[in-house]
Length: 210
Image 1 (tube, one colour):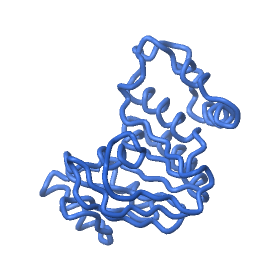
Image 2 (cartoon, rainbow, N blue to C red):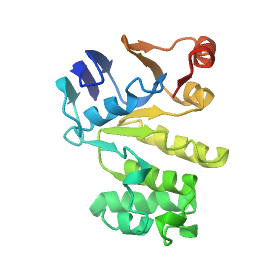
Image 3 (cartoon, rainbow, N blue to C red):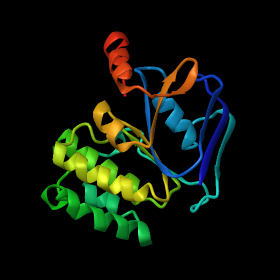
C-alpha cells in the first residue's frame, strides 16, 4: 500500500507533497495553526482541495477513517448509539476493542457525562473499527492514562501491518518510540524528523505542538 500526495492545496495549505511507500505508523507534528487538521480533512475528502491524493494497492478502495473533532458526537446520545450504527465486520471490530478500554463503565451513559478520556476512547474505537486503508488518529490519546495509551499503541501497531496510520500526539517521546517515521509540517511543506532532541528544542522555542 502506498499513499501519494502531490501539490495538495487548500485555502490554508499550499503545494504539499508527501509520499508514504508502505503501511506503518507515521507521525505528523507542526506548529498550532499550521494546518494539520486541514490536511487531515482534505485527505478524508471532507474539504475542497486541488492536487492529487492517491492510495495505491488499497485493500478498502482508498477509504479513510477520521474523527475530526470530539464535538461531532451528540452529547445527548450514548457511545453505544454510535457503535450500533456500525455493521458487519466493523461492528465486530468495535465489540472486540471495547473490552480493552473497559467501556462497560460508561458506554451506556450519555456522552455529556464523559470525561475527555472517555470521549477519546469512543473516537479512537470508532476510527480503528472502520475498514479503511488510512486511519487518522488526531490527538485522540492525549487524555488517556499511560496504561490506556499503551493499549492503544498495541492496537495501532497491529493494524499498521496492513494500514497507513497518520498520528498526532502531544507526547513526542511516544511518537519517537512507536512511529515508523515522523514528519514536521511547516509553511515549507513536510520534512522528516531525524533528530528528536532537536525537535524537542524546536517545540520549546517556537511553541510547536503535535
